[in-house]
Image 1 (cartoon, rainbow, N blue to C red):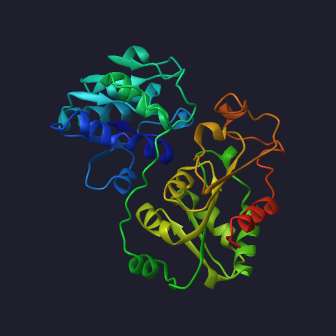
Image 2 (image 1 turned 135 degrees about the horizontal axis):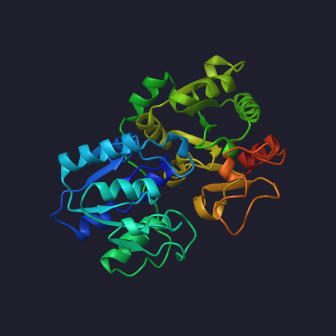
Length: 338
């Protein structure tokens, strides 16, 4: 099973594992994806690949890297059946190179010819992206499409509460707020100074603020924490297992349309998701514990997954992510967080 997209896309794709196990009880299932798959699906056969880019990160494309990765996996695993749940031109080529029967879906119409079986995902019953992997597998297996949006199952924590508190040097009596400032591309990111302002308000209310990000987002997280009470701020960098284990003890999670936000929402954490260029109909978690705040930018679309600026990955319009600090704080008060 190929799932080498962003964290959120991979999380949605891995929801299909129970369906595959039930349909192929004697099969050995391997997951080909990013390194964070280890934290998302423990005790599974995971093979890490880094050369299948997202359609939104074409600058990461390396034909030689993709080709070499596929050849190594083909020799190591020798798969009989491939489900490509990443579904872009790069993952389709990767699947084709594995020399197995390939199943995929191609909404853009760019790579359908590379699959032996291509599911009709363009006109899927629901817009939400979490539904697409189920649609691909159900069509191939001849199963009826799910009648409603599947309830996403969060990953299992790796650490006990005592271990989580010890690793972050936290007290059991503290109330924790998680801020997730990063996203796959800059246009989706709320301004750092606004995250800083929210953190200040949370600390004034006696909360401890955790700021999470990848290795590449360390400077961003550090800048947001700069000037805040050091006793009340922790940086959690590039440790998804620890972050997942922290979810049961969070009061709230605030972030953009990103994988961590989807994980926290599925885990039942009170979550505020901030949207601008992407459409929440396609990616926001539809749960009672989730609030979506959306920018007023006139370029946003109610019909499509992205606004018209997305091929640029960034946007300098002043309306982009114009959600205010007051809006977020008001929502936290409504949710009983502050």
